[in-house]
Image (cartoon, rainbow, N blue to C red; front, side, top):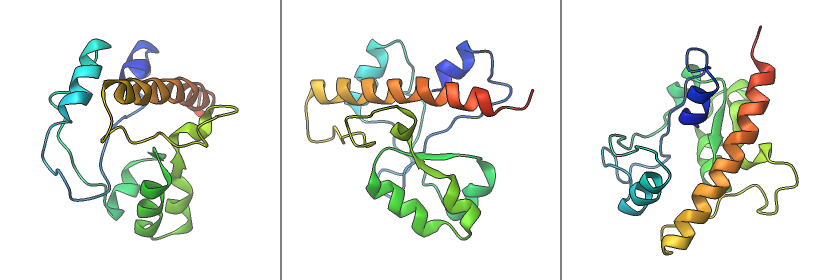
Length: 139
């Protein structure tokens, strides 16, 4: 998403970050298979470190996206207000006629092809999301 935002010339108006919803892997770099697929696509994710999204982080973001319903529920449970709950959305909800029921399958227990599919699904959703956000930005 960050690359798409940069390419669209909107990095001064859109902030992109990535966090986990559990304490597992805090401070660690992405999974080696994620790094491999990202590198294949010309993305550099090696410097990213896992941090956990907390209730106070809702104040920093206008939109909080999740890849599946498990993470959606975790964040909805952390939301303290209806406004915060409304910020939580499935990333693939922005993809029309999504055949994956708006979830990105977890590639963790799979092989390289599962990580490729995950990146493909996320990229497709990010393209759709950027179009949505671009329409919502004030002139």
